[in-house]
Amino acid sequence: MFFIKLRQRSTELAVDLTDSFMWEDLPTTDAETVQLTAAGWIPRINKFSMRAVTVIILLHIVQSTIRIVTNHEKIINVWSPIDWTVSQFYELVKISQVTFYIN
Image 1 (cartoon, rainbow, N blue to C red):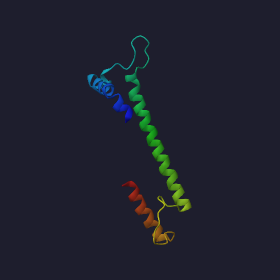
Image 2: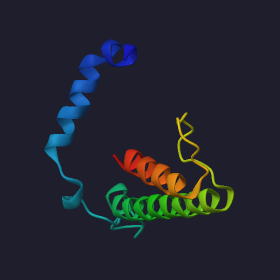
Image 3: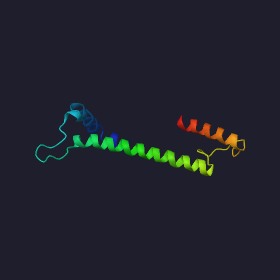
Image 4: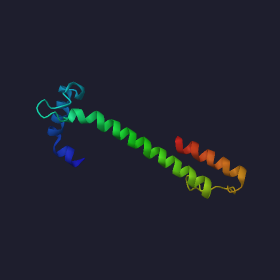
């Protein structure tokens, strides 16, 4: 925050410059070297990052599910007034924790 306050005018100018062009309108390759420009890299980086995030989330879900099922662990370590290791309560605790975790 301090840096932004210190260089407030420069930051405002940089933000104002972004209104003068759109990345989609810029050329994606350099005419002389036929290499990708910054505008050409943005869609590729966006696609890669979305795929990486999706893979990481899926791996986390699979790993957590395997750990929960095999070790009978809770998703969130909380105190509960019931013996949650009993079968019916175990499923109810898991369902409540999953709905809490999603919301």
